[in-house]
Length: 596
Image (cartoon, rainbow, N blue to C red; front, side):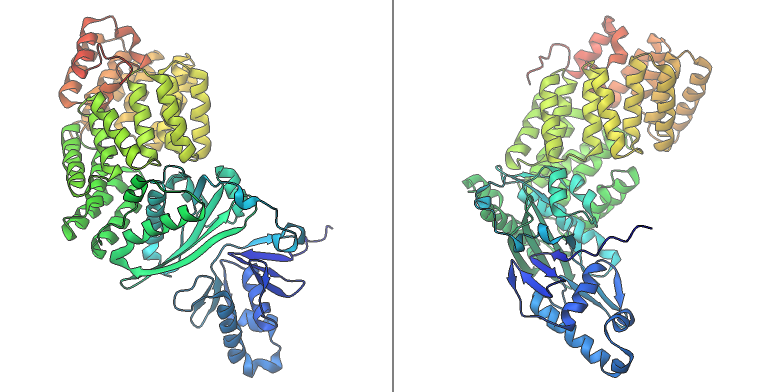
């Protein structure tokens, strides 16, 4: 029988390190004067980080039966001395949380190391501070409120910090989607830095008590796990937007980035925000980030309540624009209902805050998907990037624009930039597969779709995209299997059903196609079904007169998918038809060059 691995000698958290063999607690390499029971309590908490250690467990491990009478007093003193050494607070804990009448929980991430790995036990490497930090990941802030109902707060504050830091042009900041993959992870910070390909990591916690919010943050060098900076802030919740920008300026200063005048302007302290409106906004973004129809509808209701609470809250209007844009793209609302509401919201947001990058990006989506104003879309996306160089959505959405116009190299460049900011995004990875599909690079498209499904095997858009590539390679059996999986994962969305219908038609299963067409027509009596989707089923059946009739209806609806007419390979047999050229003209694609 193999012997169990010995317990790690060194336990590191924040800027501290406990050497269990030497019985020493060190802060940035300097030994602290702490001995005896406090260190014993600390070691138990560190080895059980994230778990509740009951008072009874501590008594059994550290106090014998004959000291039971003094146990409560001794434990209280030990924890108090620990908190004093760590600069911690019982009211707003950063490290040790008290659970009344139960025990304690250690809140910070703990890394277990051998002695040879400890920078405190070896000479510091000369010159490491001179290595420039030009990329950064903000890990999900720990929520110390102790209230599960407030879980949205830490996620929202994490996203807000990322947005503020992304305004610094010389700093590549990993987007929220990829950062959130590390929520409650036990991976070491150097490993996370390697996986995200960043120079440094920012971690911390957030606590809200009434109308006060406290944020702690520490900046850590990714390669050697050295703490570069740490600070705690406590503000009135109405000043939270200014606090986020203040932290961004502090980080830029400590990684020795000189802000340009424009960047200073972006990070100027904004006016205070209504606490109730901002709280509703954070809840809304929590639901919006699920990117499901149900989540987006919940988010829209909360965005509405936020601006009802504060009619001058620009971010609330930008959130509404994002919500209506997604419902339009998902065919959850008719385009003529979704996009005008999105535009009114985005314009109101810019009236209140002309420098709000998210609102410009939203206008770019509307110009691209609804107005077919290709030059206007590119202008809005580029403006969003100028205001926020880390605006991953603007790169992502502009890349899609270039692909729709046939400018495939520029599309790949923007998607590559988006992936550098959000390397774990299944949405961007799948969309890279889609633009490769549009450019005819089917083998590369397959690779990207498979990579997307490795990130999330339940992402039905990637399943549908994979099926469409198989179809172009005439691998119909594989295509139909993926289409059916996409239908199941999408809860039988009309988008997925129509693609399955087209695929079955191309595979010669006409009897099964008629069943899907009847189903789509029945659904259209209950909710919006895009005429483009029905047209594509008739294209698969080679019923071109019916297809063009439905395309004309889609034109009247202003279906988002008509913007892909120029590059969709499934339409190649229609391109010589004069009716197809008329469609291209009406969508503004007939004589448009690729250089927008």
